[in-house]
Each structure stands twice: as C-alpha cells, then as structure tokens.
Image (cartoon, rainbow, N blue to C red; front, side, top):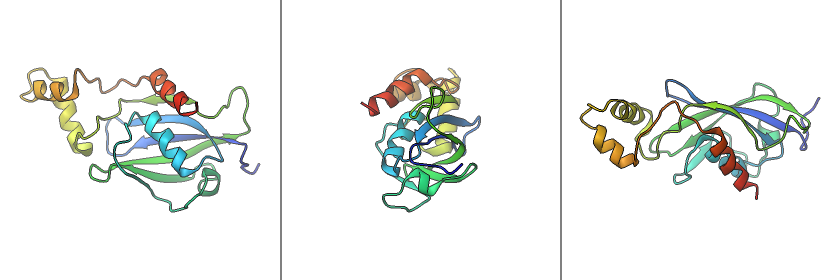
Length: 169
C-alpha cells in the first residue's frame, strides 16, 4: 500500500554513541514537514531546543512522506553541532490512522536524555560516572551544575508525552 499524506508513520530514533542506547519509538503523520519533525524530536527525546540542528537530507519544504516513504528508510538528525548529538531515525511501520495508530504518540523508549551542554557523548559518560559515584571528585560539582540527581536509565514517557501534546495545542 503506498504511503499517503493521511497515513501515520512509526519512527524509531536512537542517539548515536551512548551505551546503553538512548532511544524512542513514536508516531507522526506522514505529511509532517522537517521543521515540525524537529520540534517533535526535541520533545520526544527530552532536548530543550537551545542549539542548532540539521538533517542528513536537504529537502526544503519536504515532508516525511517524500524523504522516507518506505519501511526501513533511515536518515539522521544532528542536534548541537558543537556537541555532535547524532541520531538515527528509522521508519519501522506505517498505516492508516486508527484508534491504535494515532499521530503524536510516544510508544516506547529507554534512557534519560543527556543534559544540554554536557559535552557530547564523551562528556556525557564522564558526567554519568561522576553522578553515579558519590565519592567521585566531581560528584558535588556536577550535581550542583545539573541541579540535583541524574538517573541515566530513567525515561519519563508520560512527561515527554505531555510536552508533545502541548506542541499540538
């Protein structure tokens, strides 16, 4: 069945360079453009949209349906050029909207989004090591910078869904 503008697409996004993997599965309309998809990615992942971003595809005014219309299609999204937070996004399913397949829904995910300005994947590893070990020489400094404890494995899907819902209002 060809992908139409009314279809819903299930995407899987994964943050490259983190172990364990930080990933999300979410739905968007096939007709979504890249500017709106950027806003969705920010909310789904947990970023704060304070840095530039870029896509691996250069399709001004393009829609998801035009750039990734088939199952298994993959493209990349970079957030914060300095830190180089690269994400792969894969089309994992498509279909007509239904009560089970609605756009703008987060279906699954794992791992907390790295804090903004932590210094990329290597900086994130150092941050996590310091935050996880109260005897680490930088533990108190990092905790104060972050504003409290950080739980690397925590992903609050309902909180992310609320932020995504706000985008649609």
